[in-house]
Image 1 (cartoon, rainbow over the protein chains, first blue to last red):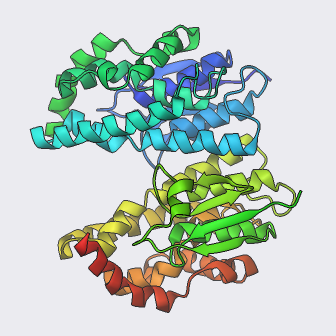
Image 2 (cartoon, helix red, strand yellow):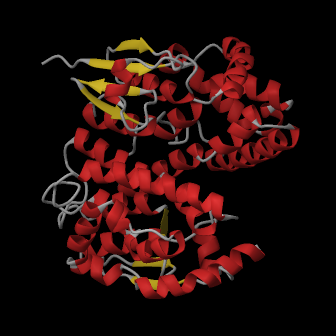
Length: 219
Length: 219
């Protein structure tokens, strides 16, 4: 049986990027269906009735939700090409720990980007930079988080990279000045076809921000 | 080699309970070391330098943090007795989805228990009840979340059960009136030795709440 793989996604999504990269790493062909988040499709509501959010990965008609769960699912469903998680249980637990930690950066980023005032934005920036420095010290001098192998933790973090310019512009700071090793690592990641193909265009993301801010104020 | 397993924990922890139950399900002997969270031990700070939180599972000297990651680690390290996650990738993804969803109930519970005022507490209660109903509809008429087999999602949720009396007392509502199937399921779970041995005493948890509220106000 040929697998039918569909991804319901929204092009600037930090989360959707992760799933796109994991599918590319496994050389899985998939139908990408762009979603209008202001006018959610019947398919999205049917496939993710609990959260009603993208990305949703639909494999042979069955939905998998939450991007890091999708990455694990992709790795377990197509285990041969480019394993994304280590095989050792301890190393797997460490990878999951860092994936979970990276997701904990979101409240800070939310405040930085959509905060109600300058003070809240400053707090968010501080939280984000502090956490990114922790992630940077975990990376150390390795090529990727898993050593020489690109994998789960890299995918979790590189999803944010398409937004780095926007974070810098709206937070008025330089990520490279704060975390130079993270920027060097991101540039290595972008050399991979899977990443280059999947990341949204930074300029377009930055241009989109005022529109998203407006929508958030209206909601 | 005999495994050395140590759990750094705090008796009323919703999270620590999960790890205790998983270890009991696998018949793993472990040294339980109670932690004073007002005066964190050098061992806790060394083993979880990032979050400085319990529970920490130390396996042959190496720490694993975050309770649901510990449950997966325990399942992968001792796979033979009582598998906790299904073997099928799709079913595993579903189990992880519900574990993740259950953790998303925490902000609501935080507001319910530690909210600054009555309005915030009411909001928290509403959020919690709504999410618990979603979890209840996922359970449906099954014995456990995995069908006839007690596993990962049961462990994720039953950790909260020792606190149900406290939620009801401080939220002034009945969980059984809102979600009768969840209460019936919890009573089935408590019949398992692993759960009965691991859950904190509900009365003691309820008695502890005013002391915790006082500490939170001081912090």
